[in-house]
Every structure is written in structure tokens, then in C-alpha cells.
Length: 274
Image (cartoon, rainbow, N blue to C red; front, side, top):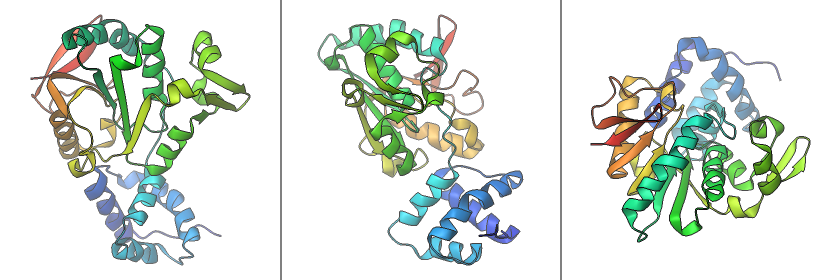
């Protein structure tokens, strides 16, 4: 099927729908990306034009078409042990302090927001287990806008790109397989609870409450200033008093919010709820 033409007016309407429902802003320079990624959806629905697809989105009442749209346009760049120093400082230094504050009465609740195909929460679980943390010490929750990547996360079979940075002892202990297919063992797979969640819409996050730590790394870069403030506000509302928000090492909350206090531990910045 030849590539269909996407008019500027239809592109802008689709872009507005994506932004209003997810906070993700598609710049004019990324119009080609929308064209490429949505062509398959047009084929699936036997549609003749992007105008027909736009009409389908508008009349769809059950949300399935929006979900499929998000699956197509979201970027899911992730892998195990991404920004490892930040993770080590969390598991080795911050987590023990949080656990001590609980005095053994409650687990430390961790949320991996925008978890994509699960590499981040599974990495955290493996690292905590290596530090001899029992399953009663923590809860790990993970969410993503895309149901497609959540299905992949639950399946927990990864390619060589995803596992390329995993230290050998973790690979031997927690994975089986080889070549282009590495299956995560059940001990780690079952330690993470996955849900569909939209950072831009707090109504989709009602099942996530009173977290002690939220990881939202390398996500805010896809939002404009207004959407960042909305997403960070939703994260703030789901943190316990003095809980921590962890964003990517190249990201900052400067000019986004003053509701968090930067705390530096071993050269890593953690944002603590004020």
C-alpha cells in the first residue's frame, strides 16, 4: 500500500487529540513520524485516508482507537540498568533510609511511571533482591500509557538490545535463553504490578496512591511546559509526605515546580516532596 498523504489541517487535529489526551506534543517537524506510524492503523481498519481515520477517532466511544493511537505514536526507548549510578544510589543509600523510617511496619512503595516494556521496574527489583531485601520490604508498581508495551512488560521476554547492559551475575540468576530472546524468571516478573496509566490524566491513576518513591525518568522531555506541570502535579499528589520523585539525570524540575526540594546523595539529585 503506498504512503498516504496527511494534510496539514488533519495533522493538526490529530496532534491536538494526542496532546489533549496524553500531554505529548508532536512538533511540525515530526509530521512524517505520524504519517509513517499511523499508516498501519489505516491498513488495519481498511481506511482510504487520514481524514477517514480522524473521523473514526472522533466517533469511537470505547477508547480502543485512542489506545491504539497512543501505542503507535509513543516512543519506548528503554533498557535494563539505564543510568546505573542513579539506581545504585537509590537501592544502596536512599532505600535503606526509607525502610528504616517504616520501622518494619510497612513496605516502601515504589512506582515506575511510564515504565514502557518493564526494564526499569524489573531492574529495581533485581537490585533490591541482590541487597537481600525481602518481598515484604517493598512494593513495585509500574504503569504506562501504551497497553501494547504493558503486554510486552508482563510477558517479560527481551531482546539483546534491552539486556546488553545487565551485569553477568544478574543474567545468570534471573534470565533464561539466548540470542535474541531472553526470558525473565518468575521471581522478578511476579514482583512488579502493572497497570495502564496516563500521567496527564489523574483519573487514570486512582489505583496508585501514597507512594514513597516515584521513578519518572526520561519522560518529561516529551511534554511542553504546561503538560510537564500537569504531569508533575499528578505525581506530587500520589506521593507520601516527604516522598521522592526521581527523574532522568539530564532532566530538571527547574521552571516546572517549586513543590519539590532537591536533595543530593552521592552526586545524584532526588526531588523530595515539600
